[in-house]
Length: 393
Ligand code: ADP
Ligand code: MG
Image (cartoon, rainbow, N blue to C red; front, side):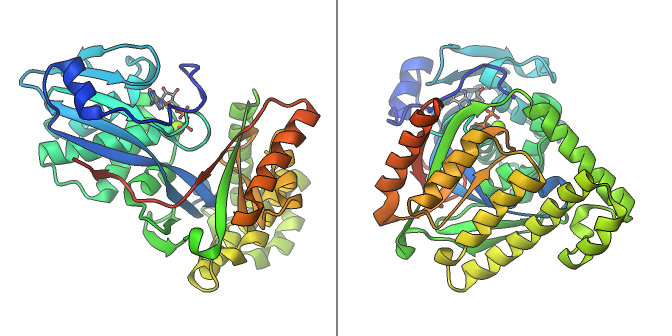
């Protein structure tokens, strides 16, 4: 889904946004807002089956400094990339017209105007340290920072749920990406030391305690840097299998199938569709079990569920790839208590829940395994559950 071809980590050091804004736009911003990227702890390919997901907001954020203008001009600049200042006027915003990263902020402005909110002209400077295209939702971090800023600046009084839906509208109808509600729900509703348990049917969200540090754990993200070319077709065909499975089983969505129903389902479905269904049904169950365990013994108890999620994605849903399997297997063999691919599949990142003592060993082993296999060097970093979108100055 990379349209601009930009990948790789955004700069880790942060600019002084206020000073840079003055330098670029010739005045002080009205404020600075930030919104995080996210990692999905567990619950993969369950969202469009009206099931459960458990993402958390991470300690990497997109920040926007914004000043309202007295005309209908919008000027946008990112500290990353070389697109320079992009200038447009509000009335010219149409789906499909924006280029590069500006489609994210412009999509949000467009979606708010579609809701009847009077968005003024503005100058906006973006600085993000969410790695691009690594499955951490750098694009939603931008959208959520922008919508939080505009909600404040216009006094629109939108609830978190309103903002979730408006950013989904921006993504679906302006950017043209058929995404759900998970990423922006995590970014907007996230909270330090918590994951966001989301029911994708009724769209309710509940915070669940998830703190790695007190449990002596770190969560490693291993970005394989690969994006296999069949990912788009693979995604569409998996969705189609899920729809077929629900139809044959006579349910609205696979959310309505229980683990106990699987035996009967196996007699009704062809072999491949059955395995796709089994992934979704067992994955929903694993999310519920994870929520249960996080509320009790805590993160050190969820390793086997992460492992089982990976096995299911690899064997039943068949959306892993050699790089992801190697990252997961090597992490496990070197001390991680649980590991899985995360995100849509066919590349992207794996996560490995790892005792602090084993972190370096896992990192070294994964790097060596990738070198030995002739794979490109992975990017490995830690993330922790952090606060959701907010104004910071
Ligand atoms: P993901 O959201 O998983 O990181 P996407 O392909 O959805 O991957 O979004 C990545 C896109 O978001 C980039 O190609 C770029 O257009 C935009 N983007 C993200 N961060 C920045 C940034 N700091 N500056 C400019 N554009 C960015
Ligand atoms: Mg994205």
